[in-house]
Length: 64
Image 1 (cartoon, one colour):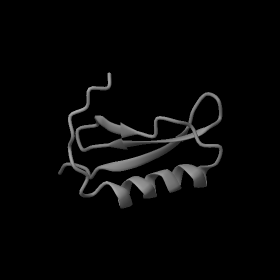
Image 2: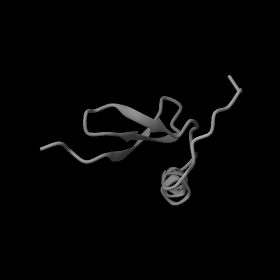
Image 3: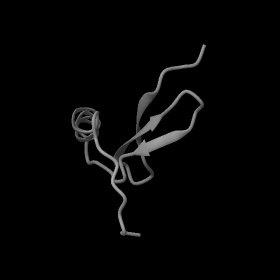
Image 4: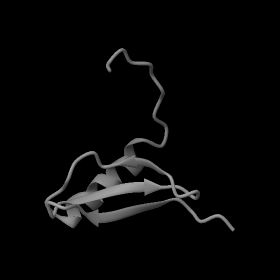
């Protein structure tokens, strides 16, 4: 049975907290992109993604 997607919380080499979203095949499809000073800060980042992106639109950008 495939496992469910999970948000993993971890500390990086600098001691900052980060998160990554890992899907059933083990691929990381999103990450925090920045370190947080506290675990709570990283958890707030996860909550923000969950709350703000469920119906996010797709736009094509010229930024590279």
